Length: 521
Picture 1 (cartoon, one colour):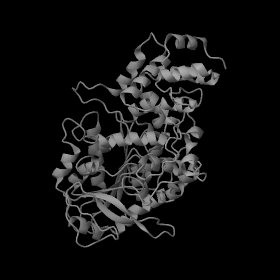
Picture 2 (cartoon, rainbow, N blue to C red):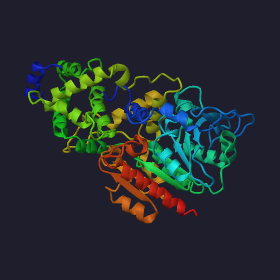
Picture 3 (cartoon, helix red, strand yellow):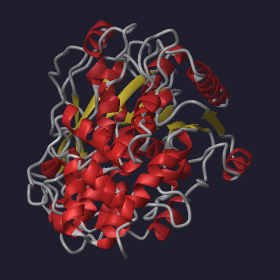
Picture 4 (tube, rainbow, N blue to C red):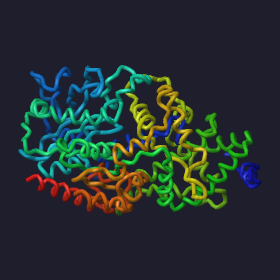
């Protein structure tokens, strides 16, 4: 295919991040940014100070068992460790230290226990004194337990992250971790907090994003242990061709047509294969050091996806810039073609964030680094082996905000390089969705919450889909949708924000939990 003539003119007049590392690791870093921003608001005290002021009692337990003697009281932000089984379903009988944080200050006898497995991020003590689980515990006389997922934070059952050592990182083991803890919790919590758990206390699994999936699946598979669940932005449906993600991003961005026009031209340039022209545009985007054209094309989705996925409107009356308006402002220069505007925007983004394109976006970057404490590598293994979640370009003739070169095969190709030939990167999502019931989980007493601006809502139970009616009607479940919110907004946003409907959603969540708890009486 020939390069469009006007593209050559653009190149002469103006020669100018979503992946030098796997896409999944980029997504994880966005989640880390979200946790770091918990209660990061001018009207809120810092997370560290808030944790210290809670006055919660906690202790470190002996790593050799679920209970121990001689435990000492530690500060509120101190971790609690539990001896967890490495392999619940195999022959490895060894244990590892799994980290928890516990806040029992609001607990009254018979009050609920809110268990938050932190999913694909390290367990953060910030949630002991802020966020929706903490708010629910205060309002219902409950306790908050933050549990770290295996292979994240400091809760690693292996000494390195080579391919064979990743075999214990399965959803099944992660769910059984929680069940094993709940079954052995009474003595453990008494030892670590001095609180005797009442037999009437109900366990409520809570979470956001992947950890929300865990909350739903715990309620479905362990109904004898988990009484109810609160799931914020839960992408329950596994997918290896998730093009709907970009369609939601497009609806959220007023400049989506301009972006689509830029992407169409970029794909025409890549199709033509003119090496000099392609390399010139790479330099214009600030990505000149990327050797792979697919890595270059994939890198362009990072800024747009992050802007929409974690969009929060500026506080009312503030002078803060609106993130969506700021991004689309780059496309207001009508003297340039949209491709040049996108190049200027991306180069500015890379420069201002200190991004090294090669170490941050090359597909195989870090493949042979087997050191532990690489949470991004853990999440990449999970999507390679079980979930997929590959975000792809919508099929023609639909508008595309990412290059057609951003395919599932390109995103999954590094899986073998990272973890060996047994991990193809194309998991059997049909079988997975059959096993875990996709968007029709067999559950009762679950609160599903989504923001309409969240691209992941397309894989979740939302009021925008007919499936939600079946979930509501066939089980005593509640589905809540926030019009101006995005990913996990209700779960982590500062409590001081009471605008754009988040306060209404949170009240509805509390009402639902109270309704569920009354059923236990």
